[in-house]
Length: 66
Image 1 (cartoon, one colour):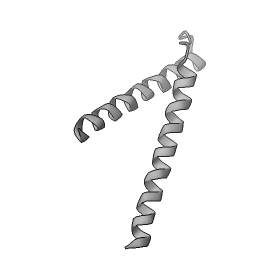
Image 2 (image 1 turned 90 degrees about the vertical axis):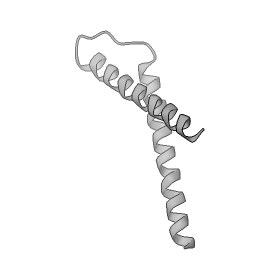
Image 3 (image 1 turned 180 degrees about the horizontal axis):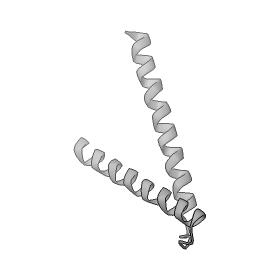
Image 4 (image 1 turned 180 degrees about the vertical axis):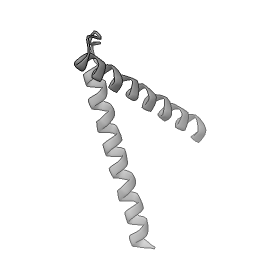
């Protein structure tokens, strides 16, 4: 279960990276803008920020308790 969850998270991360590249291409080149890419990038960045903050809080709590 843990292995498949990591693969799923990695797949979502790769999709977020692709959406980020598409957003930059649509904004700064003549590449057509794809609908929903901006929202996908914002949601992905939010999830990564909240997840990172949660991990920092968890690690900090473990150091504080130990």
